[in-house]
Figure: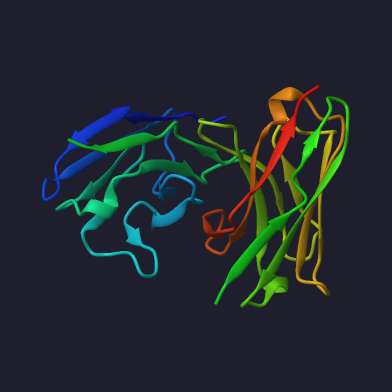
Length: 107
Length: 118
């Protein structure tokens, strides 16, 4: 099973700041990585797939990068609605696995 | 618009059974793979099961293999999860999700809560 480790566990920033979230895979997964956003009481929402492709309707301030084992989700300028929990997910092999999440808090 | 609506969650005793349903609308259900994903209270996401568009290919997480059965009825635009021999650790919100990009999930339903407790 491929283990995804996200860091940091919690990130405290202010609106307008840049957020950088990391996800590391326990073995190479090419670019088969997605990022999801989850707000309290809501289902997750797909943000990024195949490491760097924005899903439909996702604002351009969200970007993804990386390949192999190290991946990054960047939010260029935080809006109030961006404070949430973010998960990475790999589809390189079964079972599909998720990272443990990064909580993005308002500072 | 694309919509997934789960139902069937409930409070059940350990060893009991439950059947979850997911009603799909706004897209051609029979064209898509589907999955169930769960989230224990206050915890992260765990993929549970996958079914191909025709139902011929099915996968399960090791934690549920032999106890859960995924199925679909393309004539009813519905996905199911039969859950037997439930354990306390199966307590979670269960989401159905459309797999439209090769095991990426978009969208997800709102979830249905399964609580296993005596």
